[in-house]
Amino acid sequence: MTPAAPRRHRKAAAYLGALAGLSLALAACSSGGGSDPAAYPEDDIEVIVPFSAGGPTDTVTRMVAEPMAEELGVQLVVQNVDGAGGTVGAGQAATAEPDGYTVLMHHIGMSTAPALYADLAYDPVADFKPVGLVTEVPMTIIARADFEPDTFEEFVTFVQENADTVTMAHAGEGSASNLCGLLLTDALGVDLTAVPYDGTGPAMAEIVGGQVDFMCDQTTNTTGQITAGEVKAYAVTTPERIEALPDLPTTTEGGQPDIQVSVWHGLYVPAETPDEIVEKLTGALQVALADQGVVDQMADLGTAPVSADQATPEAHAALLEEQIATWGGIIADGQGG
Ligand code: MLT
Image (cartoon, rainbow, N blue to C red; front, side, top):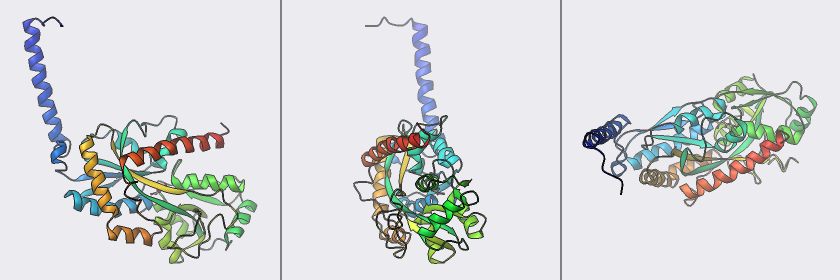
């Protein structure tokens, strides 16, 4: 048994204990609503989207935010914190109060950042708790409407023959559009001038405006422009054609089976967030993904909600770890590792 501390130390200890109790109570008040898991949520919840407003990740987030807000009885307020392929927003979420009032929506970029950013400010596994997967979005290869090639096969030949002048947009290193671009340039054996943006929302405006030639982007951002004829579309990066764009061939049909990628998305909270709060967020996410309005909106944009057993912390954590290993290997190979 440890000897009893002298009396003055006991008084100081009691005083410090009370002080600690007080600061906890103060922290509870200051961090946006109480942090009593049983009473959660008592305040609006901020959802960080690490890419620009109006882009594919923003679109998916706003789709599920509404029914989740209804289920939780508070507002989900989207905050676009873009930059550096999504690592700025993820870094901000990693250091947020672990009280459930800051949630991050991120995608495949969560699994590529460790291999691409030597000085990454967070660890995607240690600094976060997965809440659940949301959707897996196919990608499309699109170009400005007056780009010369008409078919995917012509696009491949044109890019290979004009690699010194063709420009490719993407949303920063490690972003989905960057990864797809890497798969494409690797498969075609070319080096292209890449033009980075903070999201494919602003990149799309430059494609439509003709300032940049092409990009590989998610159907949640391209379907509207493709069906409106504002951009040319060459291929979709999934094994099968998609219902929303039935006439768009797959990269495999076009003789490029290595250009295969789709973009999984998931919700995260800071690692210290109580499990009881994660359960409530997971529950609200599952309700949102079963909402017919969300199902229809996603179908119109070429994607679909994941199944309920995928919208769980366990399935999300398993995929994240697998993808970190997978992309770590691909990126290392690409860097000649
Ligand atoms: C975005 O929302 O802008 C995209 O997800 C960016 C990307 O990863 O290509």
